[in-house]
Image 1: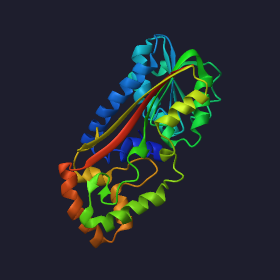
Image 2: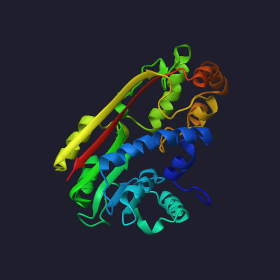
Image 3: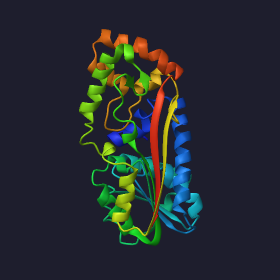
Image 4: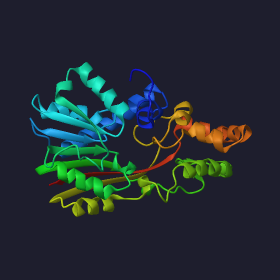
Length: 296
């Protein structure tokens, strides 16, 4: 993006998600492309149709939809971040596809700028985790879809790995420095309280229930839950990338959190234990994803 990044959504997607590490960004995008392709497959796009991508972010799904929609197809990029919409608009102009794209600043819970039955498909990726009123979002998704239109979403199910046992920190064994890790975790918990954060107020069963309550005629959901040694998909080993990444737009980086939670001597002690594990990728990863598609 030209000029300064102004809001936290754009700052996170374009820099803090990958800690400014080019190799980590490439790894992240490689993993996200597999998600994009599956979301688009479940959307069953038809040539000449219109797709609404809610929470379009940097345009991963929206730009990927242009080819299957064909020259007469149209994509609506919807996001709450004007910075990200302008970023995507610039990319669309550079690629010569701006004439097939629209850009709408709107939250998932209020798509009132669009008429009823305005689009053939709605997609989202990791959007509902930031939405408090998920039921309202599903109602809006259904409203803007044409009869027979499809909703296709991807969401991480964060309740599968929260809370971690006290001897683990982001999957790493911190038994010898458990007291220090606890203080770091406390900063994250104050920043993003588990009892009120929308990332932790749902699971795959809630997604099914919300889709049915919104009166979709047909609903399908696939859950992938994994517990395995090593880094999660798309995450590279390496201390610098580890401490400079932020897990989501609402929280500080790990390095910032350590600096806030610990004295310099304590931070040095934690790093002495944790850094070799991070550099070698010696962690136990727990992660779960839900893919849902539904027909109006």
